[in-house]
Image (cartoon, one colour):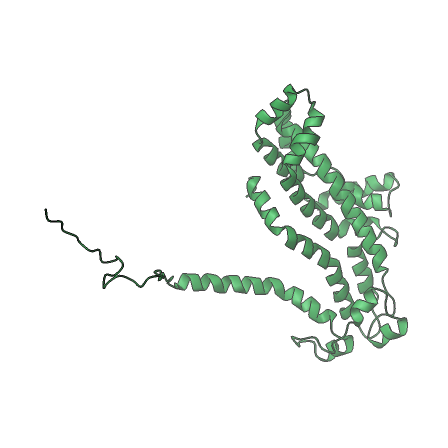
Amino acid sequence: MAVTVTARADAPGHPGAPASGASPVRRRRISPGRVFAWVVMAAIIAITLLPFYWILRTALSANPALTANPSSPLPVGLTGGGFARVLGLQSTEEALAQGGAGGSIDFWRYLANSTIVATAVTVCQVLFSAMAAYAFARLRWRGRDRVFALFLAGLMVPTIFTLLPNFVLIKELGLVDTLLGVALPSLFMTPFAVFFLRQFFMNLPREVEEAALLDGAGKIRIFFRLLLPMASTPVVTLCVLTYITAWNDYFWPLMVSYSDSSRVLTVALSIFRAQTPQTGTDWSGLMAATLIAALPMLVLFACCARRIVNSIGFSGIK
């Protein structure tokens, strides 16, 4: 019986077979569209990072040198005097010699005020918003959807319209020029926070909650011991967003704080800007203070950027 064997062209030992250990390499063709996309993305990144670089360049420059050479892309008269003036590590004579105003800001006190306000707003707002979101998503009560629609309409009200009523209320309560007065308008629920968490609670399976009810757990226990831990990802994301917003708030603290006891860091920067010496604005010190004030939020956002993006996508916000 004759057996015919046909050798494959890619079999080992065949003259046309590739060398052992070698794998076919696929080269991606670089299309003009891909090149254009990378160029546009690089331009966007450069435009985004340029202000931060210019702040750092100005903060590391000396004021007299800035006046003489304002367009230099590199720090002129490289010095750390701006940071020293902001942190109170420089005497009045040294500050005046370097083009400063001679006066300094109580940086550590303003930093503590900003931290207290931002922390209080974040903790209270996230907690109360989570409770409201749970009520709108899981509890059944008459008129729930209509109340939520009315509550959600608050997103369309510009913040500037609420400043005057809030100021009158804070004044009547005697909380002007206090940290509580600075934090109170944003201390409770906000429409965005409630909507953000409600979207997540609606996606949780009801079987988990029903099983807890059969085990004898009440609504409050289910919320704090079961649903809130399951919502840790969107809660952390909301905490980061709320903290950054509270930290960067400027106009409302400017309206209600008049002394160092309640002045936050963003308002203190404008006070530092107003301390203009005879030679001109202390740009080096002002940019150093701005960089120090923004650095914690930049680090916080960089550490939580992926979590924020994933949580927003999961919650259905487009």
